[in-house]
Length: 173
View 1 (cartoon, one colour):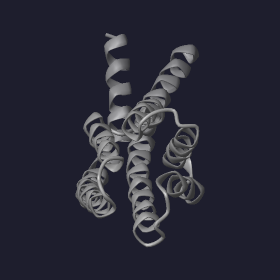
View 2 (cartoon, rainbow, N blue to C red):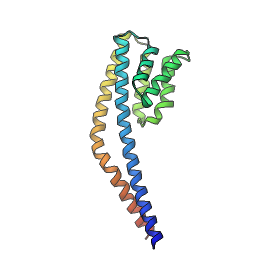
View 3 (cartoon, rainbow, N blue to C red):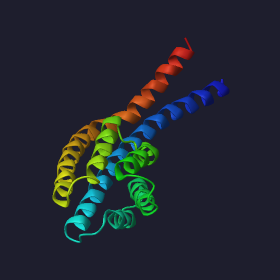
View 4 (tube, rainbow, N blue to C red):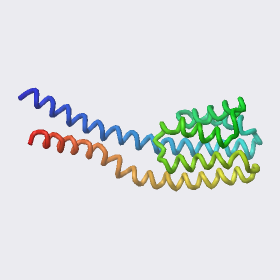
């Protein structure tokens, strides 16, 4: 009947939409990784060449980087300015609060939190070195993610559409 065809079309479109949602989410994850890399390179430059205090360096990063990563650094700067605790504590709490929205995988978030734990305690040279090591790891992860993305970005809408067909066929059996 006409009603069944409308429901069938709606379900197929909904399943396809789920595939598109995952495609966008995966693309956002890669974009956030790129923002993290840019933010850390700005932070490194501010610390190493500008000899900028960490709070001011975080403010500069937040101004130059938008989105979730910029928001993260803005909140770090604000909390450092109001002396809300040690950098490690502020960094970890803010990461758990802000970066959960950024499609960062658990392992990536844990590494990000470890980075914050080292920034407040080491001398300038060691902090810069730590940032450089983290950026190298991040670049490798981004390369891996980009390789996977070509397959996954094409695959998600197709899987969504096929799952819709499977669901419809199971419903009509």
